[in-house]
Each structure stands twice: as structure tokens, then as C-alpha cells.
Length: 98
Image (tube, rainbow, N blue to C red; front, side, top):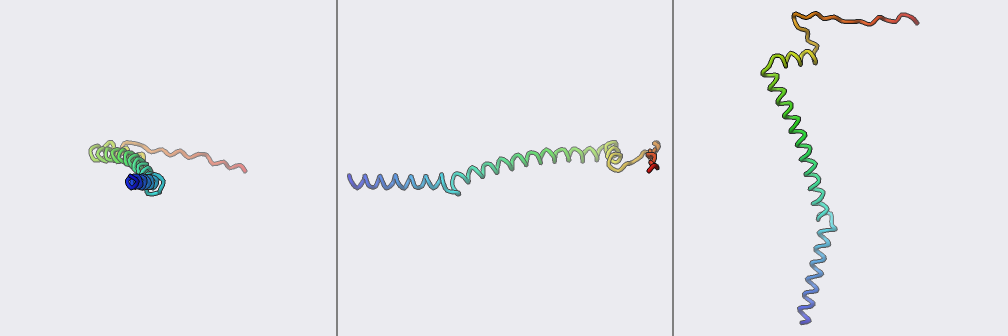
């Protein structure tokens, strides 16, 4: 009986040692938690990029299909003026007093 008791104590100590290494080492459970956090952050980033890509895709389709969207984009970004429109530039009066 003494031999089996010693073996049991030895196995218990080995199990405790392995558990301590699992919970306390940098390659153990802490690394698993860090990796789970990194995966969650990456999923959030992917979701926001997926939404941005969907919006850009919709804008590309809109620009390909409709002339109005392309014209609106040219007006806002490039300052386009239509053929039947008149451009007026308002210049502020220069202050000549010193």
C-alpha cells in the first residue's frame, strides 16, 4: 500500500505542476485570453470594413447606372457647371484702409 500511496502523491504533484504551468505561464491560459481578445477586435474591424466596402460598392453601382449621381459627384467634387447654368463669382470688397 505504501508504494501505491507514493505513486498517487507523485501523480497529484505532477498534475498540480502541470496545472500551475497552464495557468501561470505566458504560453498558457493568458495567451489564450489574449488571442481571443485579438480575434474579437479583428472581427469588429472586419465588420466595419465590410460595411465600408458595401457602401463603396453601392456608390460604384450608382455611378455606373445613373447619370444624375455622376453629375452630382462632379458638381460637389470638381465644381462642374451645367450648360444651361450661369456661374456667378462673388468677390468680397477689399479693405483699403490701413
